[in-house]
Length: 534
Image 1: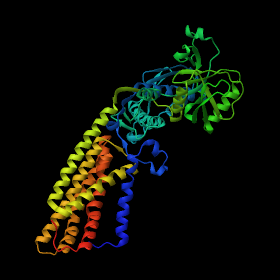
Image 2 (image 1 turned 45 degrees about the vertical axis):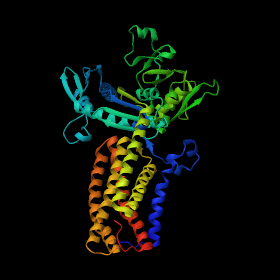
Image 3 (image 1 turned 30 degrees about the vertical axis):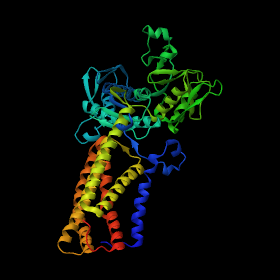
Image 4 (image 1 turned 180 degrees about the vertical axis):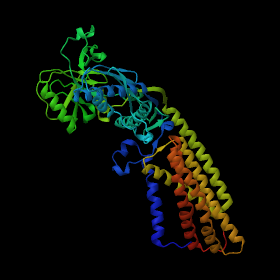
């Protein structure tokens, strides 16, 4: 157990040195660090509780999800009846129900058969339960009711939360922040924590916008004033321009010609003619085809660009746009153009998000936590080191060296992973130090027992390491299992604690058994002790 070949000893020392060197970027100024190669710029990110930042709890608007689901059903009913050339009147939505009345002479049985195709088995976690998305009933006299089932709405809310988490993550990452924490909380809430964000108001604005972009035609069949006075066409609605442009009313067709879902890219820029900030966009193949078709068929008509039910602009189509790209202009500032491009690149939220809790953690509080944490770590470490040194003498000094290497390796691994360090994470590191010392205690006490049993110094040391290995592995493996469970089942700070604890277990086994054993083996080879210095 005490024999190490030169190659094995070199591998152990080099591995420890390389991992420890990855802690260096944490002590280098950011400006200097940016000049280093990309692979060398990895460092530990301080969590919200250590460097301050923004904490938001968002709630998905379930009523908006419900309304969107019913509106979609109504549009599907209209499409099915038109495609089948079934005459109908009075297509309206009430609550969760869409009602339509078939005209006399219409083949009611055939129409019902087509409409029942809109009701699908409910997928997801409720698959196989017999639940369906839409309940369809014939109320007589040609009246048909289609009701969105409550389980379908619950499932759609769940999907909306999952989609929102992905979109929120993309939006926050576009801000240039590092390691935001975005996770689901409950059935319809999302917790967002962004360490180091200096402009929480901008974050709230980005997350508060749905960013649902559509391209629709302006209805010119009646004047806007007539529509405002009650002569509103059934297939159109009144929308307004943003408040900064005076809330000008527009009569917009409900039919969406092109959706923002077909966007592949959006970038801020400047109009070469006016030098005003704009946003350029590009569609995918499907979006480019629909955009080209819409502009070809409607040359000379105003084409409204609508973001979150506000008319950003409504330019006239002068000629067909066949390249699959275009631009959005308005009275934008540079930051507004940049923010809009972020929203469009990240995608539209499936439902509005409401901020129900907001906290801003000041950097001063984080610095105070770090300062107190340092004091606690220094005091605790010194007391442990003194105790080990007094109890085990020279071998205790080697154990202290191994513990220092252990902590350095933990920080090195956290840097390699670009992990976020929080107060619970620091607690995990402190616990690891205790476990590392405990492993050394097991080894040294075993050596002491073997020495008292009459073994020679070298034989006692060798037996101490070999016989303590099983106990060390058992203790650390059981703790590792607990850390893995905490990591996969826990959230936020719990996962940070589990990560540092798991990394600490690997470094503890390496330093307490392998690295310490190498140091002891080198000492035995050089001095050939006749007695165990414990």
